[in-house]
Length: 132
Image (cartoon, rainbow, N blue to C red; front, side, top):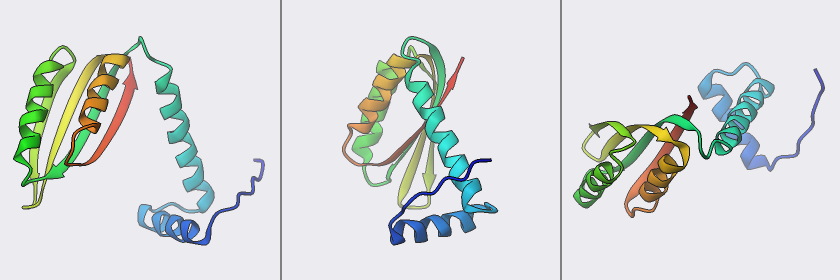
């Protein structure tokens, strides 16, 4: 296997080493290979503009922001041609987790994701695209 050398700021390397330990990687190389695979898989999905995909969209938000719950519900109805499932759970007393499972054209689902990302009050959004 070829050896590759990279330069990282000290603070980033420290955080990377903490990440490696917390996730149980055996080495920096193993963690770096895993990160590269994820990055390249994400780049490949972007090429699927007119292809069908299944997508899991995870959204976290503050529990107190009830206005977001209404807007997410409105979006769920607007995109009912691709949203096949929606799960809502409370995380402790401070956060809510909404999981959307969507199936359809990649571009249409990206539109849904970008509309969710554009909402104020969203803490975090994570997506996973699976080509069909």
